[in-house]
Image (cartoon, rainbow, N blue to C red; front, top):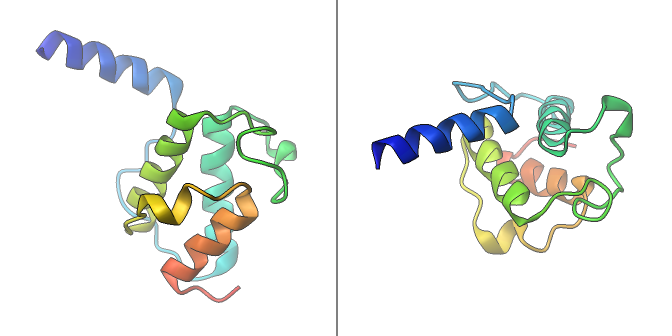
Length: 109
């Protein structure tokens, strides 16, 4: 099992470059947007100019269900919060995701 864990970890680390060790210190909505944008583009493997809050996460960014779970996992870690399935499963755009994050973090838009 240890060998499998090492292989899985190396596979995972190759696909994602997001490696924040500590939660982010967020004090404004712009900081939430910047952090989320960087995370989303990293997972979707898209350039910065591709970002548009109204594009669809699955259809336009190409995120599959595992990518969505990874996005949620890193948001939980980076923003120090817990996201329940019912809170994010119906979100279709970065704009909707950011609204949910802002409400959870109580950061003024």
